[in-house]
Length: 373
Image (tube, rainbow, N blue to C red):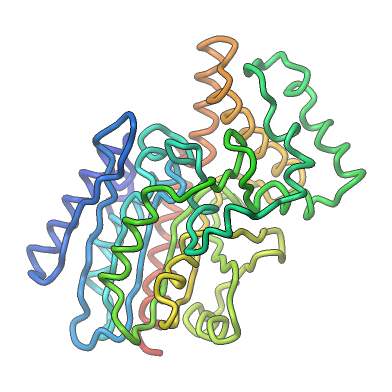
């Protein structure tokens, strides 16, 4: 097993590793197609979404999209899983009717510079939508929490806001439940450009790239399964399968392909509902196809509980505040950024191995079940 070599130290290394494994696929399958799509940037000309299309062996009735780094910094684990899929899982799959579209690093800026968001501070999992009405959405709950989520001053560890953050958070529970706080904060917002979970005021360049990519590769009448790879939220070391919105047909197919694996849906359990996410965007681009959106969320910290959730949001607040308003000194900056990276890409060999082992077990099962339906 190449457990440790799948996990890289930089966006550039991850990209090279993915391209190397993709080229190995092409050597054995001349019909496979590898492409690179440059993402426009004001500051960096070396940002790419790389894609590999692998056609079905016989009748391409189905397509599976496996995507990484919608939240840039989460791309380290996503890339590792995609590499492992190409190296270990794909060669032994028992399928006939399924093609694959592997999308590596949807948000290369965030991946490269250790942010969840794009160069424009846009959370792409809140900003991918066909209808521009998304940007007129008003998240009233977020507006009430803006001062709490987005302090507009230089980050300092000695600031009373951070020193008493947990206490301040607990006082909010007097007025709101933890579920309502979680939903208000995390569902996305379109009014505060420097705030957390900002979905944008216009579409990011990735929208056009992804739209053209999906239109090119999704065929008429194909069933499409999207597996979007994420890290950070959930029970530490556990793979959570999420589905945000789904009609009864999609729910039925999901239950069949996932067997006994629990499916967490937005607004229930300890998860939350979002809008403008990539997995559902695929279905909007191909509205006449049956599209099944799934998110693989790999928990890296125990943040489903009360205190764990507050610690996680505090890490998010600190990084975002420092990025936009600066830090009191370089030492504090390094500490905040290291903590932020660890939240989504922990340097824990046992946890990393566990992530891959769960994926080795669950992913082939879902793929082979999908191929048969």
